[in-house]
Image 1 (cartoon, rainbow, N blue to C red):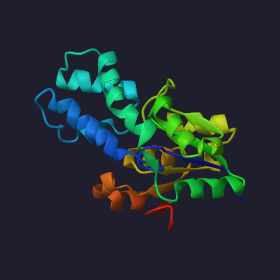
Image 2 (image 1 turned 180 degrees about the vertical axis):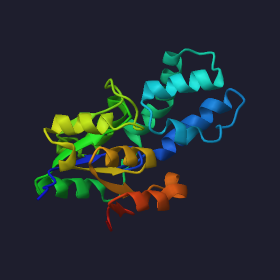
Image 3 (image 1 turned 120 degrees about the vertical axis):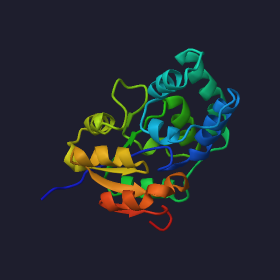
Image 4 (image 1 turned 135 degrees about the horizontal axis):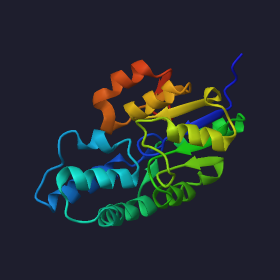
Length: 212
């Protein structure tokens, strides 16, 4: 019988209440260039790493600044919020702690970079629960592909079918599912328009960690 040994969490929108940060970053970025956030933009870059998102944005919308400048602009807008104001979702820390006590290995697979997630996890007292990280600094494809989940599982010392992935993004959840991992959909207000589809594809779902 298959025994699940590991849990891999996404970060933004899954355990972290941070989607509002990137909504504002996107809005401000395009506003100073006389644009509104393009339709479909958020969905398109949601599964990309930080650098992939910057390359896509520069090439698609003819941004004159370099990829490095775009990333620096995004970072300067977001880092203060991550370091000072952003929080884990209600009940998330307690939930992760419980799973750790139950003997699961805990991983984080996120397109975000360490300078965003690590200070926040440390401030929230949750960093020590994690056994492995795979993030936007790793040389893997975006979450349209299973690479980052497979890398995180490998760093946990586990096979894909020994892991459960918690995700709020549809394409990410589908990638994890296709490589043999169990999946749990996590509700986030910023992806509510495809919540029913997410629930349908996932093995189970969580509306909020307090009520599970």
